[in-house]
Image (tube, one colour):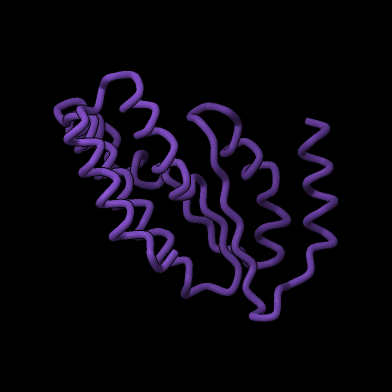
Length: 140
């Protein structure tokens, strides 16, 4: 909780970059507290008109359908579906003055590598994943 107060203090003194856009991204494994911190910061984020891009929006609206779909996918297909969703959020963020994303694309570089090293992704799928990342992240 102490860290949240420090983060709030830092946000109060936040200076806008030259293009006047402030973009914040949270990364980290599931259930590490990203959404909790965002919830605690919500009054401040609302005050400065931040547009929140939250992965829970998709999960809350279609949770059952989402879980059924994901449970039937291979590790590669699941990561690709998540990547495509995050990529669309990052692209949409560019249209807002201030924005915050709960889970940035950087996670899509870290976790598939861990899946590959754990033997969940084959060498073929790992090579395909790396090619996908190179093709789709040139503008980010």
